[in-house]
Length: 94
Image 1 (cartoon, rainbow, N blue to C red):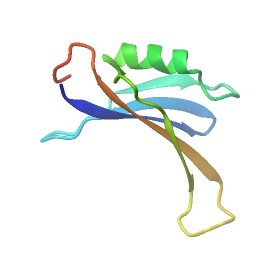
Image 2 (image 1 turned 180 degrees about the vertical axis):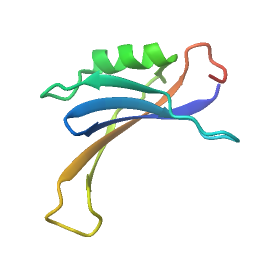
Image 3 (image 1 turned 180 degrees about the horizontal axis):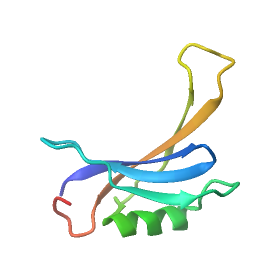
């Protein structure tokens, strides 16, 4: 069963969830979760992944990373990026 990385990010006030599919032709299926003030719930993220044809792998947990929008500039806005391991709903390649 092939595993992929799904990521959740916020840019310009909009939350986006996407899955990184690397290969001969890389793809980034994406779901826009809209402009909401709080981080989308786990249930909302799960529904978005389902809409893209993916699901969380058993025991997977979200990992959060903080990074500066401008590298090496501590006055730059901070961005959050969450990652989790997923698999396709049918267990094969998407």
